Amino acid sequence: MTGQRTLSQRLSWTGWVVLANGLVFALVGLAYLKWVSIPDQTTALYVTILYTGQFGTLALLAGSPLLLVALIAGQRLLTVLTCLYTTALVSLLMLDTAVYAQYRFHLSGFVLEMAMQASSEVFRFSWQTWLRATVYILAALMLEIAIAGLLWRQLWRQQWQARWLVTGYGLVLLCLLLAHGWHAWGDANYDERITAVDRHLPLYYGATAKRFLHDHGLLSPEQTRAQGQSRQLGNFRQVTSTDNVHYPAGPLSCDPPETPYNILIIAADSLRADMLDQRWMPALTRFANRALTFVNHRSNGNATKPGIFSLFYGLPASYWDAFTATRTPPLLIRRVQQLGYQTRILSSTTLISPAFDRNVFSSIPDLRLHTPADTPWQRDARITRDWLAFLDGRDNRPFFGFLFYDSPHSFSPPPDYPRIEPYWDPVDVLELDNDFDPEPYFNVYKTTVRYTDELIGKVLHDLERRNLLATTIVLVTSDHGKEFNENGNNYWGHGSNFSDYQLRVPLVIHWPGMTPARIHKKTVHFDIAPSLLKHALGCEDTPPESIASDFGLFTDRSKNWTIAHSYMSHALILEDAMVVTGPTGHVDVLDPHLKPKASFTATAGLVSDVLHELSRFNTN
Image (cartoon, rainbow, N blue to C red; front, side, top):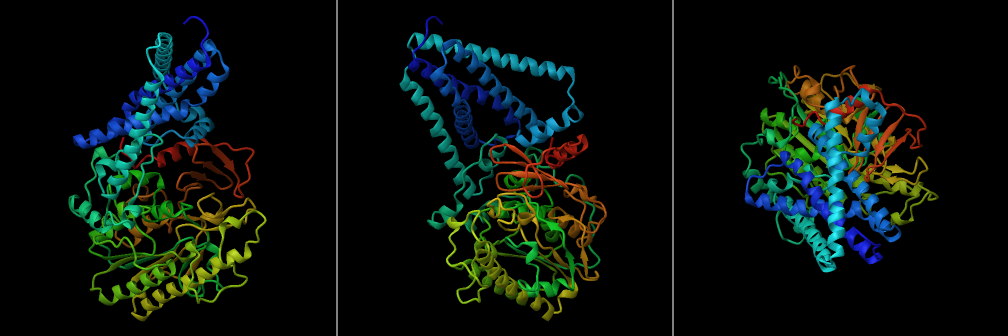
């Protein structure tokens, strides 16, 4: 490597280094294949295309800062910095393979933050492990030096032209597009061979297009779901060790319940806890006065996907990908089906996005994926009518029902429904900012809440009219809350932070034989499924830690922390702090009012418990 290179040569060399590291990344990524099931040549072809596209793209994105270095640095400095930087990237990827092998989730800022907090108290490594890691890093450095030298020599000889570099990047991007397109088609057609792969690769989020394909008449979700279910063995798919799912974490110990109560779960999307008020929800408030009201209850998600998932499974939404890929239903649903319950699932929103049809309700036959109607308020009215019709036609078996209302989420009351004034019409969310008066907007929300309360009131009145309340557990809650800039940080809606305004939801339970009460202990969605399994479905002798992430609504045992998820972020929620991991992997430590917390120390026991909770339902 003699002489100084021109800017064009330095940029060309850097481009080749980045492309070559796509191959290095893919080679390191072969470690993930241990967890990938490849049953046929079709899946093998998909995995090959995916590896080429995903790891090549990761190398391109991670290596792009080197192009800026090439603009200002000479050859020697560029070479040194590039070799050190790419070695660090490869080492980080190797670390991720080790984390994934141990915990079955990928490296994140959250894990790094916990590691730094607990240090060697949790993560203890032998000298052999440190020696092996050192050897791996030195080997990576030697490989990067060899690649750098080879590429400089080839570039000096002008053997590799720019058009081949463009062709290489084009192939990577083409493979990435093909992989996403294939995944979208496989997802829409319930092809588990394809959809089960993506969770094992870091930072890969396969494209989905079920709504698009359905709206354009390219497939029928009901038909393709039925075909997918026909490929399963029996009502419940047998989970194998290759699926990386260990659920439940221990054997179930269940007997037929002495009294097989009916169970009805009613959820209203985006319903805040403070809406349980005579002014806004008179019907539910009257019902709550005769029921158990948990006044300090929170969802384990600030969005629909994690909120409903944690409600039915009692587990963090970090298990979403694994349970979706294997179509593993919640033990709650599995148990009522084993006991012969009639089931009726009615949702105002589609059940294919988020894909509840492939996890929560994956074992429900003839599941209605879309409720026919033009607007959310009409669909809410429709599921109410359909529920009443179901009760008209049911037989003498106990029933399990789920009603999911959408009007509070969509700000959609009927056109002639009385408005709470002052009322913002039409709603234009682009006008929202920190100086916007929230009252008219909040009143739109309260109007939809009042409308939803009327529909819930019809359901509750009908149960009473049929004398079913004596034999029916009725649980009313929400998937998450909704914020109207109460913290003054310009947050509106949900899915953006983990404050009480987005997590705190009502929980009202009518349980036959239980004395009405207002319960002030802190509870979360993790508590609901184990409570129903234990106290209503005959699983009294099953340890709650075998089936869920908390101990239940009716026990004194409780954790002083919980986990909440959004679509692309999650948080460890403590008494006076939250450790929030954002979509890009950055970590913020905040107080309950979203202000940065100056000091925070996690104990070794806490870190160990959290990491264990995020991984213990995965196979080792």
